[in-house]
Image (tube, rainbow over all chains, first blue to last red; front, side, top):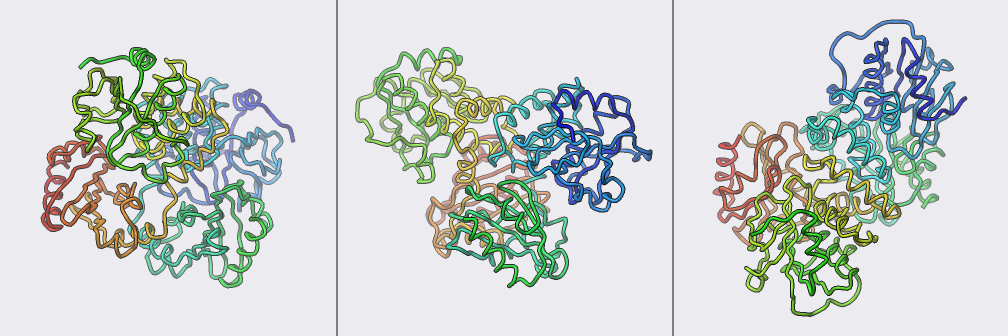
Length: 317
Length: 317
């Protein structure tokens, strides 16, 4: 694996042809913004390019997708953006495992699976890294490209709330706003952070009213069980961005959200309010992520999983 | 009233002596950040300066206040920051009404009561305007000053979520972060936006579960009555920043929060999610504010006030 600079990656992007762009499973604002901005950039240069994801793009990110048909072609170049590990390609790993030419990422946990990697682990988002690459390429920053990049940085920083929102992030956003002053960034933020379906509001209230306080209130735990989702008439796609909910109470250091994917199988999302490294905790369960936002998958009964999570967080505090 | 440029206001600040700095009643992050940053800047220059407010500074802003005794002296210069109208001095209006020499503000509704005014109505916050003035003054940006300015901009933009968070705002924040990279901006944001007391969480759930939907869901209304606060064991200071709560549901254009100050007297906060000018609506009730965030004071029964608010919003939609 070859580590590239921003300028070297820009040169590779300018030289590539017939590109498949891979993003990670359970796609979020950053990988969607990264993937579709790159698709737009490459198409602007007259290249064939197509984003591929093993999961559907959630409807609320629909505004980032271009109109028109998807293209079908054999790739000459495979690029992964915002993907730390090939296993996050999901079922596409069978086709693309070991075949990734270029990767742009900001996850310090990147496995180095690509032939060439641009990794900036200080960047708030893959979109922040790509912004620099596009500048080095001399791209024309159209509204679709700027919307993608802004959405990636806004969503990965909790609307510039978290510690990963750096001077460089704010300066990139300022540049993008100057390039496209007519985009309604406030409406993007409203759609990403504020709007909730009536069912989601009901489900949040149900979960908050049963929020568990452990370890003297330093750990909070909420359960998004299949029952809760069923009772409030919400499905998986209504439950995105739930993970910060348990950080609301004063004094919490680790907030954990347990989302039941299928009976007894929970997607665990951990968020840190203080200086605990939740990525390290999730790694002990075979997961990973960022220092302040990480996840893993656990199987078991609620009582069993509660005990295991409490024990792991207790050791880390 | 004389309109000043940034450079002219900088010259006035450099020349003034023995300064009383006035901020508005029910002080928020922006006027507190503006007032205490200016106090720090003037003291840095060896001048006597003291912030004055008719209401106590809420405890969660305590980190912006300097240690040590307040100074008592007769002012030679009176400066108001982030105050659109002298009546917002509260009981201090008796002493300072007609006596304000300099005013720095970002409210388009500023009454022009000061002898000289720097008004930038495009600025997100008074703190954004003051940042430019301090640069023009050649101030040393110490951590206390930067914390104040950041907090003002973050709180007045909903953590950079609203339409007033401009390229200029993000660039000012980037500059401040470069000047003081060691400040934990994420912890400021957590304290300002995420942390809630157990009582506040309970009260929010109670209010959300009784949220009213009017005008086909384009208007939502929540009531923070004295009863709700009493039942959940919270007081006025636990209820800050409540006003965005009714904007959560999909499709809402105006969200209204009715806070009962005393029996039958309600502080009305209106927030716009779409393009409705809530400042204009509040002005019909004798209030004011910004296009997307405004307020007024109303007296009456809940039934009466509900009817009046619905009628006013219906006309505006």
